Image (tube, rainbow, N blue to C red; front, side):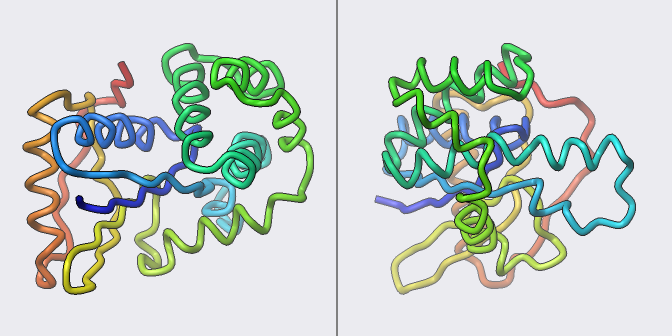
Length: 205
C-alpha cells in the first residue's frame, strides 16, 4: 500500500479538490492518505504586501485550523477525515461563512463533541498548528503553497510537492489514472516542476 500525506487548510478550495481526488484514489488504487493541518494564516502572516482585508482574512483563518488541530489531537485521523469532509462541504459547496455556526454544524455532522468549537477562540493550539504546517512545507521553501502532498516509497525515498492543482475533481478510474502519473513522476529524482496557467476557477462539486 502506498503511503500519502496531504497538508491542507480547510478554507482553501484547491486543497479541498485535491483531498476529494485523493479519497477517490483510495477507492481505485492501493493507497492510504493521512491528512495533516497546514495554515494559510501561517503561510501569509509575514507577507508585507497584504491589504487590510487580506490581513483580516489571515486572522479569521486561524479558527478553522485550530478546530481541526484540536480534533486531530483528540480524535486522530478518523476525526480529521470526518470533520474536514463536513467543514469543507459547508465552506466550499454550502458557502457557509467562517465562524461559530460553521464549526457547530460541521462538528455535529462529523459526530464529534461540540466542545471542539471552543478551540477556534484560543491560541492554545497555535504551536501545534505551526509545527504541522512546517512539517509539510519544510522541504519546499519559497515554493510552499496549499495543498502539499508527500509520497513515500520502497527504498526510503520521499517527495513533497505543491498540488496537484485540479479542477474539477477527477472521479473513479480517471482519478486513478491521474494518480498513476503523479506517482510515476514523484519516483524520479530528476523531476522538479511541471506547470501551466489556471484557466478556470475551482470547481468544488
